[in-house]
Image (cartoon, rainbow, N blue to C red):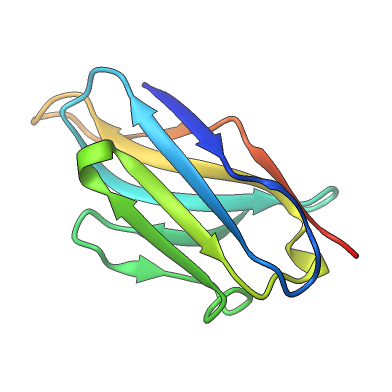
Length: 120
């Protein structure tokens, strides 16, 4: 399973960015998909997650500003980030929980990370 993330970059405070992450390879199904971030000196933290049924989870720090969505036909997860703040600066990683067969447990795969920098 390979994950290809894109969409990071430099944006001014108050601006917007949209991240995407596409999964490819041989697998039976995808369950949860998500986005995490890690700033220098900090632990990796959850930014948003979405289940196969569409239930979404956000921490308070991004609630109301970030929106996660998925396009199952394309095995892709998106993160729309609005009203960005300097404290949102981090490397963003996508995660995808994949089942290789109907009887197997899900295994988490990670994208390569994409840099998001919010600065004037």
